[in-house]
Length: 184
Image (tube, rainbow, N blue to C red; front, side, top):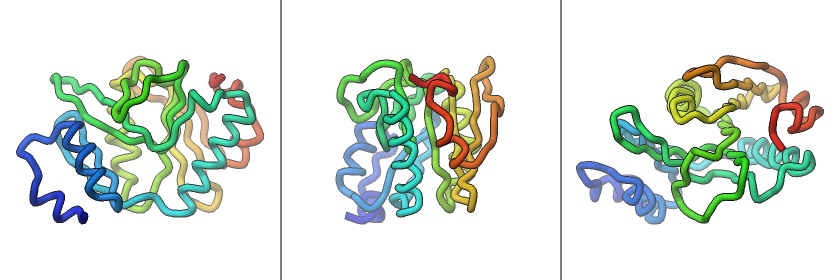
């Protein structure tokens, strides 16, 4: 099913259950919604994006982070300021403890969210999601650019906002240990 077909059957207020049904009906797109109800429809990530995600997952696993604590492209319930609930699908999530199976998991035990920037996702990944993840209390938020250096910008929660802790090429990150970044 296409995103156009999904759009024709769009309810007036979209819930996380609606998003789940939309993604099941359209395997060619990823659907997210802000706590304020703004729907985002994105194409699936490309090959370079997937390679970056795999490199980070291997680094985490080799660094001692249990594979039960790391997930790729799993949905998070994002609470809103005015009672709304959104759903975001980060590229990688690291938890402090294993989670029960589900489509939209709570952010309570999340240690780190990583977003790998794809063409067209810069604004959502670097501004919108950054604000939402900070408001959810997620301690760390990393953004990985798909530039030549695959630049990683590491943000740490400082009060209710993220501050930049470090910016470095992915190769440098991979030469550190997850423990050096308060992971595992």
